[in-house]
Image (cartoon, rainbow, N blue to C red; front, top):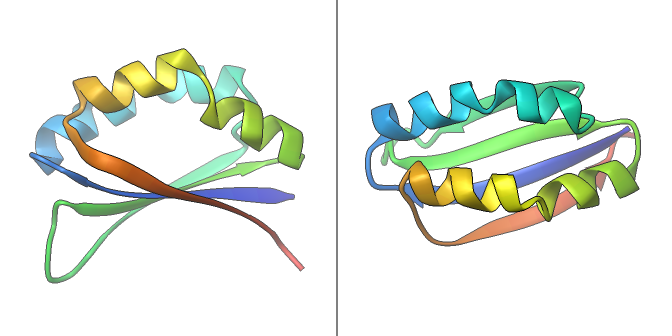
Length: 89
């Protein structure tokens, strides 16, 4: 199993969350098997999201989706997200 981590700041968490929740079907259709959202305690607009996949290749493909980039822009993501992949051991 591979987990994709994405950390970014958003302009407005409530607005971002609506876009994120509406993206659920795209996540499912592209191999996301589980997901979670975390907010920093000292900055509620500092978000870390995890998405789990069966393979690294599926996670990498998802991270490159044009629909994902569009949703992030629409959701008010600020700057360039920090992205990394891990394997559960």
